[in-house]
Image (cartoon, rainbow, N blue to C red; front, top):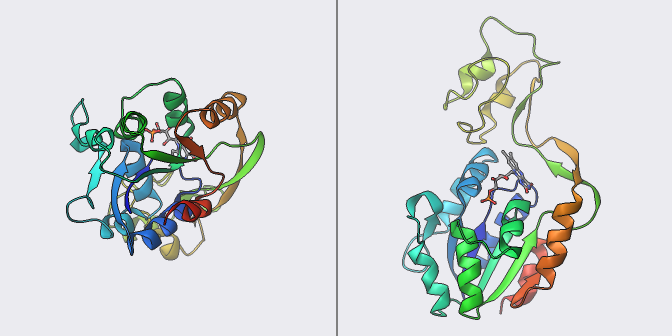
Length: 231
Ligand SMILES: Cc1cc2nc3c(=O)[nH]c(=O)nc-3n(C[C@H](O)[C@H](O)[C@H](O)COP(=O)(O)O)c2cc1C
């Protein structure tokens, strides 16, 4: 199959999505579309290189929002029916809100809109599905209560990106999720992959319910369900 796979800036379900994407790329032609936040968040979780690695060649591009202009010409491929399937996983509450309101102002919302116009089946895995609290994973984080404020910070010294400059927090926009800092700190003051509970807002759950009712879109609970739709 020829597939478009769009990634937005959600940390939740991100590594699970990348795992399925890698598997499908062995047997299918996949173009990857990244929102600007998708690109940043993939880097923070150390997953960007894995996604870049599976791309290369016509219809196997890595299409990043910041490299497009305002009209997103690449999304026209979907209205022309060049793809068999569009997958958006993971999908932030922001992108879901825009889709249900018919807004197309990013590479991801544009490929979804054009898929609707070209009747390309679209699978969406939103991160906000059910009310209540959900456990999610954080990128690298400086745990201040464990930091002893060493004169020479080993974590900072080990960082190839100079992402720990202040000894108060990691600059996630510089971080590439390599986790060298976690291994370097003798006091265990850097965590990576810490789990926290986040509350699902009613507005985001309502938008997911609206998404379920949209023509041409199938909403999935988990990236693992994607395989059932790929022949
Ligand atoms: C580390 C990190 C993790 C994030 N995880 C989520 C998430 O799980 N769900 C979500 O809706 N937004 C999450 N965000 C916020 C989105 O990236 C942000 O709302 C962004 O503007 C979404 O843009 P997009 O929908 O165009 O990708 C996260 C941000 C950061 C920095």
